[in-house]
Image (tube, chains in turn green, purple):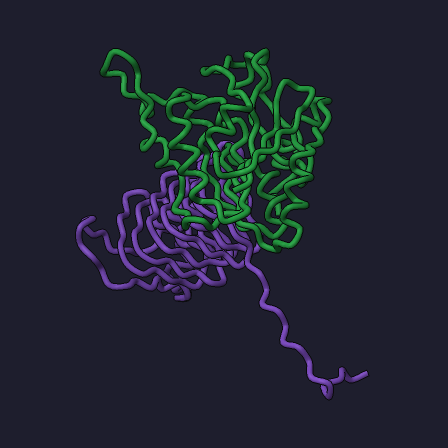
Length: 210
Length: 165
């Protein structure tokens, strides 16, 4: 389904640079969870990557694409009201980047490291809004950084296969917000179950099941 | 080169606020002897209509050959067996049905393509895509849904319908 070798080369840049693909136990769990769902509807909140599109379409998914990460990584001034003493994050402006998605229609949301980039006071309404798009049993999949990982805000992630990841830009820009603890993420999702998978790369993979 | 210089289609130039009846470009008129003499030896027939940059068009557009839009169009585009290219200067707000759609400019609307949708890095698309194949170049902007054209399941054969040997 990809257009040309140039795109495939770009999609595999982490392999080309000698970086191995990253196996994901969380994704293994996720696809096992959806083993009886032939056409899952999935929202990808990262920058558009042909590799991810190919992998998910081959799986039979209907994809929603909405790049929520890039405006945060670029500190888009349209997302901030700086007229007062303290800058205020404009969540509704931010959510304009979402396409029209019927409520409770999604099987999964791939939010990557979105929760590491959003100001903490905006997280509860953001997570509530995202979870409202998930159907019963739907899964919010993302990464949370460990507190000692201070850089990597501009990382771009994509799927190389259903259960392996790749990235570029790791370790460049500093994270704008403090790291979230497991307790804090559980508080954001009081009615769901949260599974956390530790990695060796300073990140936790988090699956929140509605 | 995919987009060579092609003769501009004859189109109505209308104010953006006016609506126009559907325009069906006459694409199959044979060249006259006069035209043939002026342009030199006959080359391959023109296979693409161009809506140039100064053109602003609104309505229902259908045609019998490929179409390149470098201007502005609002309405519906039906090129079931042909390719639509929205050039870098093209601004299209439309429901699009084509065999193939290539976007280098801006499209707002749903796209259905029997073969492929190709959004290049300068492309900006807001809408839902349904196609047999989808390519989105890194750097392109896309917001919407992506779904694959799925073949309808073949009807089940009855017990007496046996393939001939």
